[in-house]
Amino acid sequence: MMMLVETGSTLLGDAIKSVQADIDSLFDALLPVPDDTSARLIEAMRYAAIGGGKRVRPLLVCSTASLFGVSRDAALRVGAAIEAIHVYSLIHDDLPCMDDDDLRHGKPTLHKRYDEATAVLAGDALHALAFEILADEATSTDPFTRSELILTLGKASGMHGMAGGQMMDMVADEEGVQYDLHTITRLQQLKTGALLAASVEMGAILGKVAPQGRMHLRAYARDIGLAFQIADDLLDVEGDVDKAGKALRKDEGQGKQTFVTLMGADKAREQARALVDQAVLRLASYGSEADILRALARFIVERDR
Image 1 (cartoon, rainbow, N blue to C red):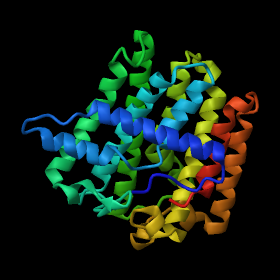
Image 2 (cartoon, rainbow, N blue to C red; image 1 turned 60 degrees about the horizontal axis):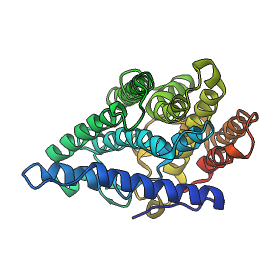
Image 3 (cartoon, rainbow, N blue to C red; image 1 turned 30 degrees about the vertical axis):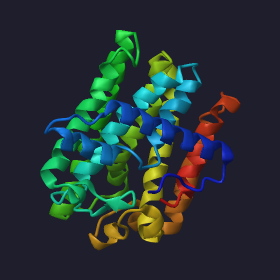
């Protein structure tokens, strides 16, 4: 199990370890295994949700929410909701009808560990769990806050966000559509960037920051979202399979257009670093309380998995 990455920052490393442990504990509490024939579903949900991943999205929520004095428990619940959406998307993405992957976080993908039908249901149930968490008063006693959280995650994960970006990606694969750099950027802003942006936005929503007061945070999230995907594209070309814990070299094998194929590895790397520098500048109005967000932006282009 690959729980952590070499961050080069004690501050960030400690923050990642802490949020990983806290999110695992929260999923453990949210997903008790019943003593009936639905047990396999919950066991599958636990298999996918507990003990894997960097937890970048929950860390973004917690780090943003902490800027505005939000309780960590509330931020963790929102982070778990976003992570439930992220995990469901990975389960479905790994299925034979989509990417047909055998490995995720260094262990067999869910449909390999169980079966395809169970994987579909586990993804569906995690999707539902995300909105159940956000609608619960334990997340926020303010119904307007809960409503805005639900709306934000719904937009980020649906046809105008992650799912829409995934469809653009699938159409390109199936029909041989060649995207230019502008379209690839839009695709990745939807497929990958939307949930990252929602993580920052929802941390600010918890802090009751007015929409016009979130503009710099949205810009930060947009920058790191693109940098994250460029780094992913570079990892697919240059990464170590054992460290990544998933299949690599897939994009080239499928003839897929990526930031690397369109820009070249060196220019793509330069662009990712420029985006990170720009993201850090977006936080200039904050002091040391935003250091984790700054470190996380830099980590995105330095990670090896």
